[in-house]
Image (tube, rainbow, N blue to C red; front, side, top):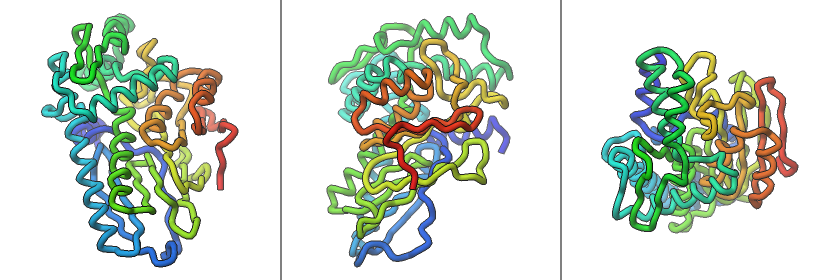
Length: 336
């Protein structure tokens, strides 16, 4: 598909593109004793979302799955910046938002907390740079100038975002927020909470490589999650077992503006440029909201600095793959 049409199509769908992570195929059809499998895939959030539910009753599994999909669709309508009729789009267009839906208040609160924990690496106010890149490469077929980037950086900073329980507003004209680096994880976390509320104990949600596991496959068997080489789609770099918890991956291959991938969707909020050290970063935590944001944040600083803030977050483990395909793993990262 031609690049501009591809970006337009993905933007219309929503929040993100597909990383090179997936649930490894299960050759055996037998899950835990007495568990039937139900699975569906739908296009959501700029990717394909697969929900797999295991339950003694297949009818109950499909019923629970439909409610999980309905919850995802409801939240997308609140958090998607690409659609013109969402509260986030209104905020970006007008500069303020009142009567904030509690879900937006919650996810922005998570983003602010992760901004602090990552020493500013995760920043939802980088939208002016993303808009600049899209304009320059789609209209002018060239990179923005240093002066254009400098001017856009003047509108970036979480300290310019006033966030209260019922109100949000910008202190700088031309600001905007993007929840692309956290919303998908939050939406999947909420969908799995919906499954839990219906008594589901075993499930897997794969949102284009952002994965949340609930309870393994039964009989204490984990889901097997494969991570692909970011530079070779025919090669798997490893498989990790996942009984409970989340895995998210960010990479320069996901959404880029130029053929050389010098300008991609991950932005350093201090420089306005895309980091070039890594080709992918995968993060495992208990929450996909946190894993989603950390996979972006750990891509931005030096490896040393990324390790420092990862160590401060309980249960977080990471895998970095640099441009030379060299892997660096945190101490708790385990392959099968």
